[in-house]
Image (cartoon, rainbow, N blue to C red):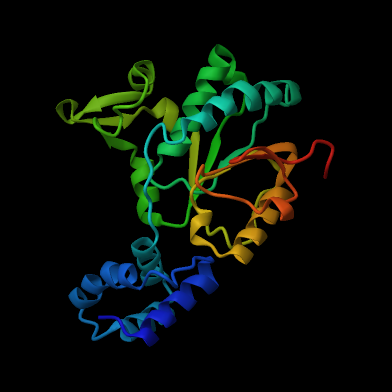
Length: 273
């Protein structure tokens, strides 16, 4: 069992490097790491953390992050966001970017790929035959290399696709493994660019984003970290740009630069640099 001192060492490491607050999750941290530590022959959590901190290849650090970040997502999750995106955000963008035809959309917690693929399907649906004239690629990032591998593979069970509209399933997926699994077709895959990225790092965007989906990730951050992240997001959005967060998440209304459209939908003021 993890000691208080070992637990503190891991939580401080995760907070300093990734902004993730695990201070109330001792049982989870112990449960997710214990078998891995034992099976690799380390005597205790401290010995394992010595290896993590000394490993210049970064492999053990990636393993630690993969173990300690939760990645629960599914197709059609919080679908009202996609409906708003299609009925309000995209008509505004089609007018705004009619000359450049360049859309910049970022999904900042892509997990196993369901969310960015959903965004790409909505874009394909909205632009229809015109979509080849537009740059509609979605940037999808996550801290965990493990889930990014799954996302890039794009293989889901029939069960995972059960809530997806039938025409989307037919159009964007091919049946494999005798119908028990489905794989994202290349046509959709090439619309999503997957990258590993830590939200605590400086944002590397050369141009500002039009829409940022940052759903169900800020629950892992304390108030100060969240505040700093929201400011970075605001600064990296175009005037009039939108931010979507999880429907169970909140921003401090008294302390946010965003206009509140709905409890989980926010907008940067137009004409505001």
